[in-house]
Every structure is written in C-alpha cells, then in structure tokens.
Image 1 (cartoon, chains in turn purple, cyan):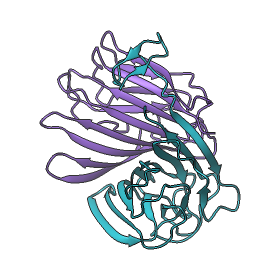
Image 2 (cartoon, rainbow over the protein chains, first blue to last red; image 1 turned 180 degrees about the vertical axis):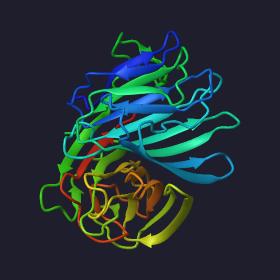
Image 3 (cartoon, rainbow over the protein chains, first blue to last red; image 1 turned 90 degrees about the vertical axis):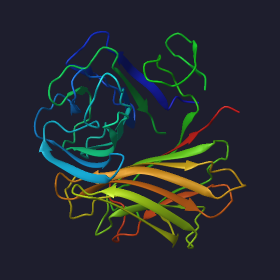
Length: 165
Length: 197
C-alpha cells in the first residue's frame, strides 16, 4: 500500500530562535499538515508566511472561545496573519494544527484550516481560516512570532504530507 | 498507542509532537475527484470498503451561481434522516445553530461564483465508525472560507445520520444555502483510517 501520510521534517528548537522555516517542500502531496507546540518567554502570537511572501496577501477569519463566550474577528490584507491563540508562554505549551489545503496546485488561492489553543487560565481556543492570495504552489513555510519575540527552546514543529490517490 | 519511528524504527508510546516522526501507515487514500470544466452537481465515492475504522474527506470547493454550502449524504439517502449543529464566526460575531430532519449534512461554507475569484472553501470531515452496524453514524467537520474582508466563515459542524447501516457510499452535494454546482478545480479526496485490532 502506498504511503499517503508521511512526515516531511521536524524541528525542535535547542536554543531560542526568531523563526522556523520549512523549505524545498516537495509538490508531490495533496495537503500539508503542520503540527506545532510553540513556547515563548514573552506573550505573543504566531504568524506564518508562505514562499517568503512578506506582502499584505494574507487574511483570516477567526472563531474564538475563551472559556466564557464565543467571538469572531477578521484580518484583511495583512502580512502577518494570526496563527495561534494570543498569549504564548513557556508555561503552557499551545497545541496548534494547520491543514494547508491543496498547497501545490497552481490555479487557486491557498486556504489553511487551523485549530489552535492555549490552556492557560487566560487562554482559549481558535478555529482560524487563513487565505493566501496567490496561485503559486507553496514550497516554503516560515513561522515566527507576530511581535518579533523569539520562540523558546523546546518549541516543536512537525510538517506532514498527505497524498491522495 | 504505540507507533514506530521512521528515523530509528523504535516504538514510541504516543504521537506527541517532539517525538520522532512516524508514518501512520493505516491512513490510506481511497479515491480522489477533481471537478473539470463545466462543474459538477455532485461527487460520489461508491463501493467504499468496510475495512477501515473511520473515513476522512478532505476537500476544497467553490460554488457556481449562488451555491454557498457543501454537504454530504451517506448511502444515497436523501430522506430527512440527518441532523446537525454548527458553531461559526463571520469575522465580527460568533453564532450557533442546529436543525433536524435534514436531507443532508452541511459540512462547510464555500464561496459563490460572484465572490472573490480563485478562492475556495475547505473542509476536513471525519465520518466516525462508518462501518459499524450497531449504531447511527456521526460526523464532524472543520471548515470555512476566507474572502479577504468580503465575507467568509470559520465554521465547525457535527452531524448525525440516523441509520445503522455500514456506509458504502459518500456523496458530496450542494448544501442548504444557495443553489448551483461545484465549480471547476474543486477537489475532493477520501481517506480510510484504520486502528490497531
């Protein structure tokens, strides 16, 4: 049976770093799944860029639950889409899952479906839909913090490829 | 659950990130459909074997005309044997709802033909314990579409099909909002997931 779901790369930070990049991503899969548990010494939020695109070509629609109520926010034409529940810390690792759909086709804009959370007392959960307005195949993913803080040692990021028949 | 690392072939006690990467060999592709020019009114996966534990449908889709939802039917049952609940955010507020006696289960929002071009809605849909003949079937979905400030939703669905038959056919059909077909380049992939016996 052909392998349909396989790890592409894993990064565990041994020292603090400003960003993590997965590059030279093969176009041979159908979807990508990025699983991350980021840590941060300063309260911050993850953001993501594809193919080194630093332009305002991203947007998000965010559904949030904070333990007492649900709400929704949106970013339009931004270079730094929110990709985690705000308030990353070292004490409460945040489990984040990103489904990067049909990342290698060259006819559609790219959508990422995300489930992210923060279990601290001030935390919550988000379901985030992120749009990248480009028809280019995604070949690299950069993850960093919105306010520029370093990701702490011990932060983990694993990229999987899912291949359809 | 024990898993085997591809890096060193050691068995691992869990799937936690930070452990060595692994190959979940029991996640298998069953079939894929890409919609061609002219669109498609529905997409059917038939003769689904009962050898898996769960199914997962992953897709991107866009509507022709005013179609704004994608839905699924099981075993071609179009009668009012489904129910669903949903929780959504539209960029300014969150809302929730639910309904019973439906002829399908909506699983995501999708852009209509007049909305931001090149933009597709997406969903990851789990059909749980689909081959079990002792209970009704349940599904869950993570979905949505973002239109860069011109609409779109982040939306979660759960649904039920009140039938104990094993699922052998899954059909993606137009949902309950708008009307039309699925546009060219919509892409649907069905996977089977096994668990250890």
